[in-house]
Image (spheres, rainbow, N blue to C red):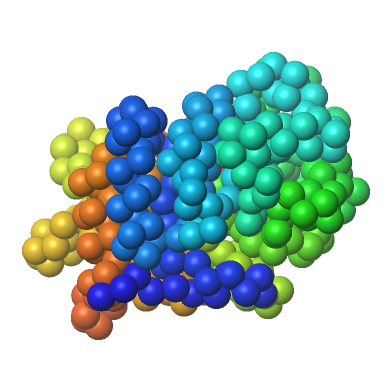
Amino acid sequence: MAMKTRILGKTGLNVSELGLGSGFMAGQGQDGVNRCVDYAIDHDVNYFDTAANYGDGRDETMLGAALKGKRDKVILATKVGFTNRERYRLEGHRSADQLMEQFENSLKRLQTDYVDIIQIHEADYMKWWTDDIPENEDAGDWGALIEDDTDYDFSNAPAVKFLVDAKRSGKARFIGLTAKNARVLARILKVIKVDSVMTAHQFNPVFRNAVEFLFPTAQDLQVGVVIGAPLMKGWLAVPQNAWRESPPDWMDEIFKASYFRFLDIHADADIPMAELCIRWMLSEQKQQSIVVGFSNLQEVEFNMSAALRGVLPDDLNAAIEEVGIVHPLIYQGRTRI
């Protein structure tokens, strides 16, 4: 059975239902990354996502090496912003020229003349859209999040000029945004024109923020949607049953009820938890690709095998549908939906 594809918004790109993200791959070394990328391409995965921020460029370098000679077989997306280079952290978010310089360095690391999608990394942070950052925020950190009661000049931000220039120059075929707040991402989408968005931690069996806020807007605007971090960095891949008796400090009652209802469904389903998540998510047609990280070939094989099994039976799908919540990412220190 071949990996299915979906058309990414109005781009015309046929992206594989399962994509690979580079954020956790570097620990296996270049040979390991090569094996994973080769296996994925050989089994019809064509969407690869990376960022200048990942490993301070190391992930782009390794992915570029792995894709050498195979560039025409894949749809490649990367991101600008939030690098460890001090001048980009302090100044680059408000400079179209510096963002272009950063992007050109990404292209060199990726060993390509263009990417299919260039994205603004974590667009729900204030520093992309204003110079008026609260004084109590550390300018060397990622800074403050967008505030609901503040107006921002989204359309005239230097980041938008950079995106337009990148597309006009041919260095990017399409442009996009990423964020961990689906509601704020929808707010920005209503103002500026992009081709795709990627949201992390906002759509999975527990969190449904993207369903509530992002999917309707993206569908109306024919903007493609990619889902990142679907397994919540592990606790939707391996059941955290110890949390029943010793929950983390950030776990509130709303999250606790949803998570453990899902764990109960998983216990009765006799399906590996990560597979349960991936197959449930595939039933949602308003997203086009689910990007999963990988740290070894076994994870790539497992996740691909799960996706190839297709959507869950109707009764199991419906049971998971009932447990979802629209809720802040409290575990990341975010208190607003």
